[in-house]
Amino acid sequence: MNPKMERILLRVQKPARYTGGEYRAIVKDKQCVDTRFAFCFPDTYEIGMSNLGMRILYGVMNNMPGVWCERCFAPWGDMEEEMRREGLPLWALESGDPIRDFDFIGFSLGYEMAYTNVLNMLDLAGVPLHTWERGENDPIVIAGGTCAYNGEPLADFIDIFSLGEGEDVTVEMLELYQQCRREGWSRQDYLFRAAQIPGLYVPALYQVDYHADGTVKSITPQPGVPPVVTKRIVQDLDQSYFPVKTIVPSTEIVHDRVMLEVFRGCIRGCRFCQAGYCYRPVRPKSPETLIRQGIAACQDSGYQEITLSSLSTSDYRPLPELCDGLLDYCESRNINLSVPSLRADNFSMELEQRLQKARKSSFTFAPEAGTQRLRDTINKNVTEEDLMSACKTVFEGGGNAVKLYFMLGLPTETDEDVLGIADLAQKVYLNWKQNASFKARGVRITVSTSFFVPKPFTPFQWEAQITMEEYLRRVNLLRGAIRNKSIIYDWHDPDTSYIEAVLARGDRRLGRAIEEVWRRGGRLDAWSEYFSFERWMEGIHAAGLSPEFYAHRERRFEEVLPWSMISVGVRQRYLWREREQAYQSRITPDCRVQCMGCGADRLLCDGKCDAVLPISARKREEE
View (tube, rainbow, N blue to C red):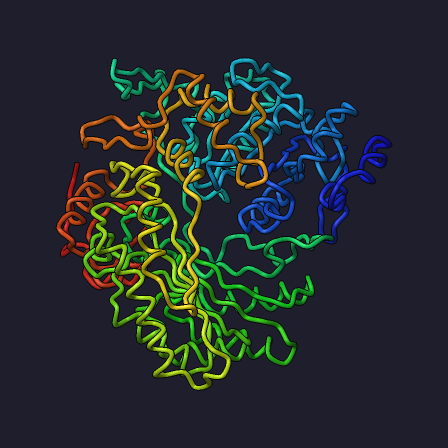
């Protein structure tokens, strides 16, 4: 260990974040490696090590001949201060080597508020911030994750964005780099050829021009560069890599458990949900594969909990079979089985009984809106009857805690919809009084509201976010309507959601603002201890930009959006049609009932979501 590191570890919180050496961490002989990849997570160790995607790609890359992938996480403020004082550059956990000496530095972007961390980690590493400042000996800086679907605010800092699922495209990108090294290509030659790989977007190869009003005028690729970059997907999850033998952290992390991904994609079409559209089409794993992987992962790691992961786990048709197979192993070993992402419209007594075997007493449902009209507007496809039936099942089975998630500020929302949340929570309380098998413990009903953020690649990507003042007015309206002491109301602070809305639909001019915020001290903005709304507002204005332009402005269908060079497989006209359906409060059936021809079937679909209509009978809309 670096002597400077030994000294400063005694002066920081949670030194185990920075030492590495965990069980199953992969250490390779440098003499046998020709390509080194620093996988950077722009948040703390506890958050990054809870990310399944990071674990998957770590294993995929380290299975490649000649490639060594190592991990790197954002230091907490006390460690950063010590590093800068001692002149210690950001390092990789496996080798302790500075990541500026690696061939690639890759960031996983799951949340817009991590953007300042990207700049801070590059600066701590000693890597030039801007793409045009980097020379032949500097690392290639890449980024993937959900935020990469509109990575334009970071376009000045990222050489390559990887769009979609990374298992296959990452291998192709690294193999191309190995060819580049053998044949002596320049950095620019490599970036140009990387842009030919489906799923890789190189922002420097695209010219963006603007109208006088600030909207995007055109996006022009250089000759030979694809005008549209389409995301990548993994076709067969049963055959794809899963980290059965994975790193076991030597300190507590947020999700300290085995995570089993039951399927990717979502059959639903919730009009606010970016993940639901970006991860289409649905691709399930077989229960046999999941049972085998879950048991093997527990045996290797010693974890005492398994979590089933997906966008809507109760939509997985073999879920009873999967739960039975896992519980046969888990019950006798006191291993807990957790099934989040439950929907109220398909929650059954059979499922509840299985989960009670795993000692679960609290259940979470997300009606999202307080009235049926607004639930139809957002295409939630959950009725009040569905929710009451699900809660009755919970209470009859002995559960005494229910969490209900809602959003405030959804398109077309009225005060009646806001008050409907309080009314719905009260009905859940009365449901408990009528159906609880054991009332002596009382009941706890938690209502949580978040501030709606319009996201790219959803039917609401054209919408305006309501103002923070209006959001708080609706919060106070709802708070005043909840008078039952058994109903607890929590609401999210609007400041971060406002900045999130600015960044989520931003263009590459926002890079100046992000850099300005960072230079003023911005980092770790996902943490309330570090986030400063005033600093963000000052930084955006100092860059000559208006946050209202990005957050509070309704877009036209004809407008060129900053992410128009990116495709997630879903047609723009389909999204617009869904927006029109929303304003009529008309629902669209889920993919398992009827394929509506969103376009994702061009990537794979072919009945993977159990659509009942043959292709010849599907409605299609060609652009």
